[in-house]
Image (cartoon, rainbow, N blue to C red; front, side, top):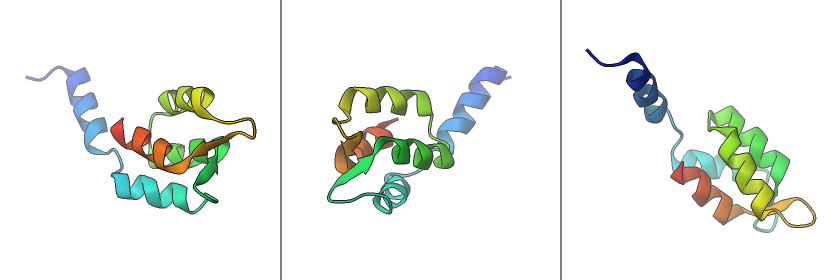
Length: 80
């Protein structure tokens, strides 16, 4: 009989969005290959991606205007 916690983790992992879904959600809000950090958080939250890891990434990588590179953040989110 599986441990309940394991079942929950497995279920959560199978429901993670694909890279294509992440790209589509972020691309709509991007401009010139960059996207606002708050738009990334809003999009990933709606996709069910854990926002704590995304928030840490944004704090480390956003520029002075609060923007991050679209390709890099998409790759990061898809790796979660």
